[in-house]
Image (tube, rainbow, N blue to C red; front, side, top):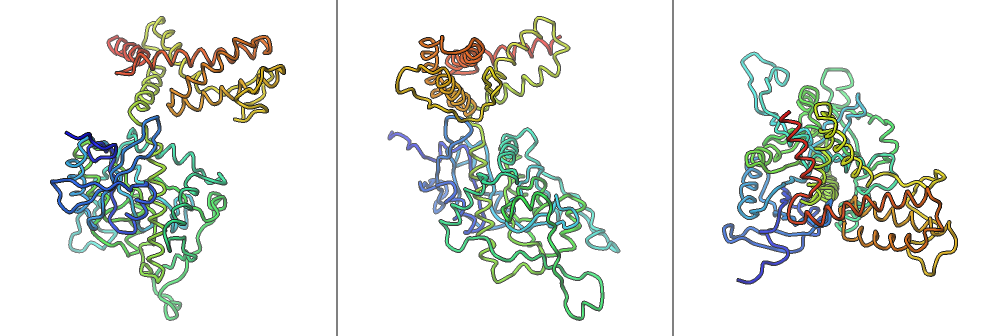
Length: 485
């Protein structure tokens, strides 16, 4: 048989779905999905493949499905199809546009046009319920739907949490802004619309209704919005989903207040239901293009939808970059086990508590900030370069180079790029062995301590290339003994 290509459906562990053409175009650009593939069981269906760098050394192979239409029933079938064409499927993301649920009286929950809403708390089928004779709608409608949540321990939710921390409103140049700007430049007529009016209907009679049936609501301007200066805010929470085009502000606000819905769309429930059933990690990501009211059909709606698609696609790309690959998952799981062990360490015998403390200290040492003996804080820069053109004679230059290399080693280890980290370990080890007299005892001790922890990790990683590492096994062994006790 001919070898399987590097990018092939059989290698894809992540599937990305969209419902509209504008959503697909944005996702294809953001992911760089240019490799076309087909499957014999689904004639006429086309899939696009991409490699996206992940949280670790091995890139993710991602399958982007061409849109099949809108609605929860269509999304359900997409997941079924993905399980057949991608036998290694582990995660799925539905990416596209949604209607925002604004909240002017609570600025921290106020969602505006062009924001991104991520269903980290789940998807709610808001038309599942009961309405009896005499009940007033919508307040009398008894909501009976179940929120389908990806779970707080989901790798996708953890990745979303990391991504939000990297894109705080105060950051002047966030990764999301950079990614979004590149998409806007590459897709015609997809820039952010100039208008963002919250035009709401008058719900009770007043003389003003004789002049206008609606009025403009002023957007609240909290501290985050001031720092964002029109850039997208990332909101986590619940997304409402139904085969209904939500355009009723009264119903919107009722669901916002009773079910904590942050945005409304039409595919997330079917998608999440099917993914949960087959134990596939899932997440719904939406960019907001309207306010779910009677002003939905503006002249600039195509531009709104294109920009909201860009926002969702840019976020999805960055989310995948935060998603750990298999090697990284092992280390993250180890950290989780260590935290649990430390929390419950009182139940362990003293010698096992000491063993646990040593193991935990080893991994914590890899992410400690680096200081010089005088307390100068590491800032990721140095007065020298990481490579010495000639033998050092100035202690300050050697220490600057040492700190720069330690920073590089730390960053590579955090990114699980062990190969490059260990190359730098050898380089620095040789340097310190050759010129130890140029460093103070405290400086030398700091550098050697960092190198020692990295060297121990190298032995651990090398021994564990075919399975769990020895330290991982040791921690699990302690954990099992503690549980037996």
